[in-house]
Image (cartoon, rainbow, N blue to C red; front, side, top):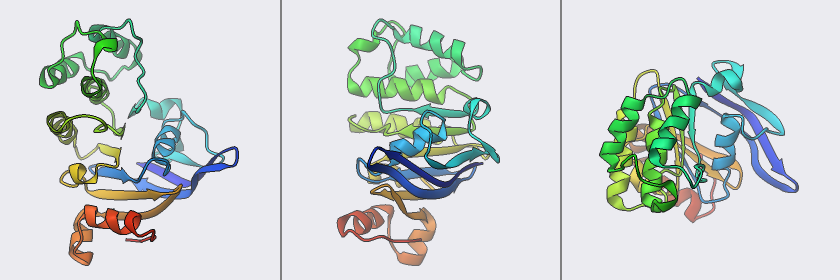
Amino acid sequence: MLECRDITKTYGRKTAVDHVSFKIEPGKVYAMLGPNGSGKTTLMKMAVGLVKPNAGGFFYNGNPVGKESRREIAYMSTEPYFYNWMTIKDVEKYYADFFEDFSTEEFERLMRRMELTSDMKTKALSSGMMAKLKIAVTMARDAKVYLLDEPLNGIDLLARDEIITSIVEAIRPDVALVVSSHLVDELERVVDTAIFMKESHLVAMCGVEELRITEGKSVVDKYREIYGHGGEETC
């Protein structure tokens, strides 16, 4: 479905992603894990064509990512991307105009769940409310791949539960979700596969159930093993 083939990305002398390869399959939820600076955001931006790799590339259904693939890949960035003058209703209109697969009905349903109202100004939203809004507009698209960059960052426990519920509801046999985070314990209950990034490298890609059976470890255990002791592990 979505394949990363031997991608490298550098910024001057800094290597953000170093010879990384993996495949994303439909019907699964992936957690892309690792500390800040490990390459997670750069990978997601390359997957939607916002950043160009120095070598290698992302492929969607066998074709290089580009204009066509962006119609089926929904990306939620960590950065705020709404104008300060916008109300939530303006955000809805903007997405409806920009994305053919955007569902106003689904967006309004998610808004009710997130306890947001259309007259709210984006500049007045708390970090938690902004996170909810970004999730709502992203998940209201009828995409085949959802890339969510740190959707749980900086928000309280109840808001995290609402966001995780929205993620779970989007799971279908023909849809893949990739969620980057360093809040490992929050994601373990909903993900199928964990992708561990460290210092620009892919150090492990583990099926969560297989990890429990073969190694007797949780994703949290594996996270501590990889990042707590400096080791590189494979699955």
